[in-house]
Image (cartoon, rainbow, N blue to C red):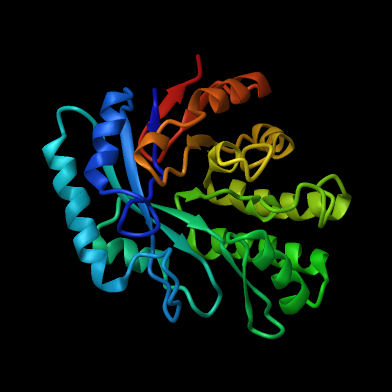
Length: 276
């Protein structure tokens, strides 16, 4: 089954109106489409998040599309929520207040608990490097460990349905800042996977880094996916679409990779799908 539950529209940092994603998904044979706008972040004036005042309109729009296209595609209402200690809101409270059907939990802003400053890891590489130098005083190991610790806390404390791009910390790396093969890195990955396994969180295979050529591989890496298989952690495929044409980008390639690793099925918050 072709599906995508990681979709951004003009309500946040996507490029088009939600209905155009729906139409494109139907044309491409997508059976289920979930919208996951970046949830508002208090005190954050960036342009990549949903504005708090627009949150009710976003929810109403997705619900209206759900009804309008109910005979052609299954549509689900969600949010991609960032976890930032002391700043982000409680996931369960937001879910209940707005009637969300699922939540993707992600870390885009890494907090240095010693100085309280935030490192934005998803922008241009210049900002990524500056964050290591200025916020973590050039200590890349400390910066990476902070990312994984914050991600683990998110899983244990907020319990999202899905964890988004769990090794996004590698996006600008490509072996230049740290070595993903070193023991300390795998120890941090294992810490996060232990939390994911305990809380029965779904790991998304996020294809965006690869099709935008920001990474050479999917999020997460093959080694991490192999660890997921050994731990029997459920996985799903998401394209993290920011344009309608991206709703199925590299879905089949990701499915083939999962089959080659040994996965027999994918699992969304709503259904399982066999990997043929």
